[in-house]
Amino acid sequence: MRLVTDGDTGDTDSSVRTALEACNSNEGILIMRNTARHLLAASLAAVLLTPGAGLAREESKIRLFMEKLGGGNEKGMLRSQLAPGSASLRLHVNHLVPNLEHIVMGDGVEVDRFTTNGAGNAEVRIDLFATGGGTTPTFDPRGKFLTINDGTNDVLAAWVYADPAADPPRPQIKETTALARDALVMQGAVDARYEALPSGSARLLIALRGVVPGDYEVFVDGASIATVTTNPAGHASVDLRVQPGQGGMSGNAGGNGNGNGNGKGKGNANKHKGALTMNPRSKLIEVKQASAVHFSGSMLAQIPGLGVCAASSASANLALDPAQTAGSGSVMLDVEASCDLQLTVSVAGLAAGDYDLVIAGAPAAVITVPVGGAATVVYDETPEAGELPLPAGVASAASVAIVQKPPLGTATVLTGELP
Image (cartoon, rainbow, N blue to C red; front, side):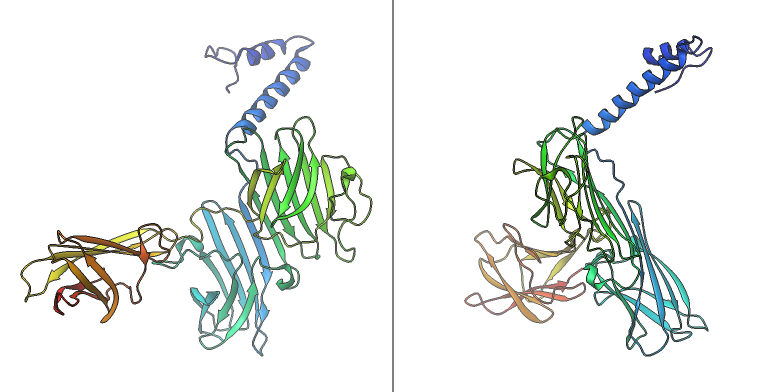
């Protein structure tokens, strides 16, 4: 929308033009306020009615002090900041072995390396989108056991966004996400936010905005945690908290009997407040109406490109053995976005019968060639319809051969290497 100024003759919403002209009268301010209010409401409604619209920004911010595992005075702190288009892990360590290369690992898999200075300190920033490679996904620290290794032993460690019982002292966590709307639901949005603070308090807030008015039940990991009734505009919220020393907030707003509190709550029916008695981290949240799921998603900010592999494909031709007179073949090695490895073997011009697929010198599978002499077989780590389980030994540069099986004979027909 564009505002009109003196001399501006472009097309503009007539209601805005009228409001601006009315500003010269005593009623101008009132008209302008009313017009702006209607335009804002219309704009908000348009957002809420747009399929897939959500108000939450996908974001994860985590700060943790790492646990000392060695016998020295090692100290460490990590900060994870994740958002669409930006994902970093910062490490600040002190009193490690000076001038030594250390390894950052997540669940035992190397993520990065850094070298301490002469005082044994280091500040490290890891671009998480630049991690991984091949069948190793880009590193998402959430839910992982992060360790720093000096080449021999783990010296610092921390669980990141795992069970709260495993949190180190004074964690600071903020996770926000928009739940996905079911395809049959035509309006509204639901946002979810989880926070844990150094004081020991924690909060799960689920906000319904512009949904079809009515009663909704909220589930976390399959368990019902609240029932709310929206206001006429389709707004409602579920606010569950843990307060240190108080056993969580007590109460059940709305008096619907489905709260997690242990006392009488205060509030409107569309604002449920109670105690946070479960671990919602990474768990599935569902918002249902009459048992039908309207909105769902994990309590985990969705960061495109994180925790996945870069899809790639490479192929190589197989060579005909000098003792053979006919036949050809090729192999193709794919890395899927799911990080699964897929091998495709194609042969042509061979006699009908069974052949051993030999990988790295060991028979790995049997290929049956039908009459006509051509066959294509797809092997996958997670086979789907028409695919076979991936044989052992599949790796880049591994030797591969197609060898006859009796009664055809025992001769090697095709040879080569995996790309």
